Length: 362
Image (cartoon, rainbow, N blue to C red; front, side, top):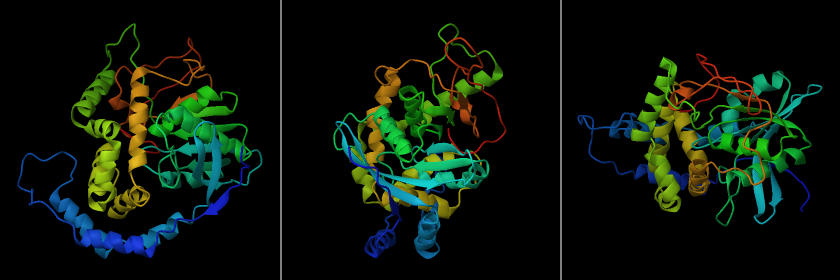
């Protein structure tokens, strides 16, 4: 096993790459105006919207300023070996609180997110006594991905565990959403003695077998929201699961296409969050510059795992560490059969309906 030797890292996109990006935007080819059509989607991604985005991108957006802002975060890369999978370059943010008895916390994002999500909660966490690590999960941003198929969420979990222990945190807490939540859950299963607490911004489970029918207005709203999602909003997952490389090739060379693909989800999934044009572009570029394909591969490897209810070999069905699930803005309303229960099968998870929450999700 190689030694754990982190190196400081700064995002540094070359001038050649930026010039090529600008040429692609200048040569953008739009379809006919669809503003008078009544068959549009409900996401706001229209020809008019995209033309406005490109105009802003070319004339007002400043990547250099965004890059400087990102590089204010203390970032690092470290090479970590994983048996049967080779070595991975893992990118992460690491900031210590400077407080005695600080609690280590690993923050994990999902798709179409990125490591910069942690900036919205970083200072409150530090002032509360957390040492914060925010990693780019495998295949996202500046963390490399496996070269062969079969790389599941529990392999990512082992990689993240080795990151934390390598940083000197034999025990730590986790906060995660989307694919990050699946990785964090596997970490809790694989290393229950290391994971002090697990905080998830989303969790997906099957309804209780003894009574799968929603009985309260809130549970009925969950089912309605779920139906909406799976009938009109979930095709992206099917495409990314079945054709990650084909879709990746289509979007790798098209910043405009990738923006449309990602903005569709960001605008629909975050309720009334006021996304700025700069934010939408920066999030797009954090997938565009490294390339989107390996992030799509996460779906191909892990959606079948999720649907089959698979978990890391040799681990228990129930998580045995303290676990909390947050309802974000609209969070639980995609999940049918939500129940509040405690005791019984291994721990307690309280579920509540908050007005707002840190983070976003479907």
